Length: 83
Ligand SMILES: [Zn+2]
Image (cartoon, rainbow, N blue to C red; front, top):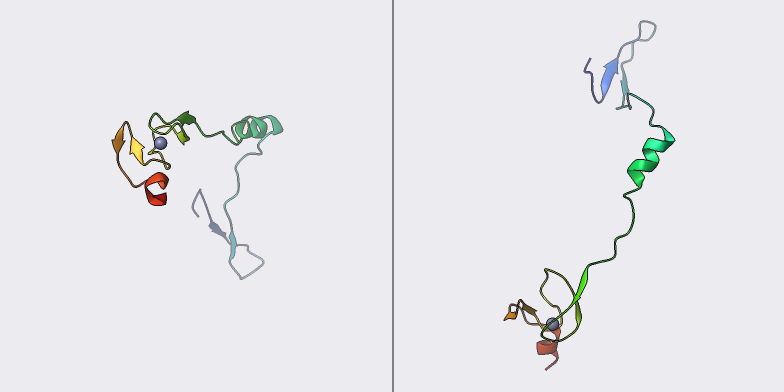
């Protein structure tokens, strides 16, 4: 019988083997649960203004509008596709 995870337990009065799933060792208190879930929240994406086109873009990401990153043309942006 393994200490962790699914284990098979035999009972003397029954011939069938019953597989018991992984179970927590200790009950988690409401406070501990709340403390863990304190981090569970929606985060607002970090937006910055693009220096090339002035549109809002995600920081450390290529601008989807003009397709530049740090003043360098990297991909074909929305502007180039429209033209
Ligand atoms: Zn841009």
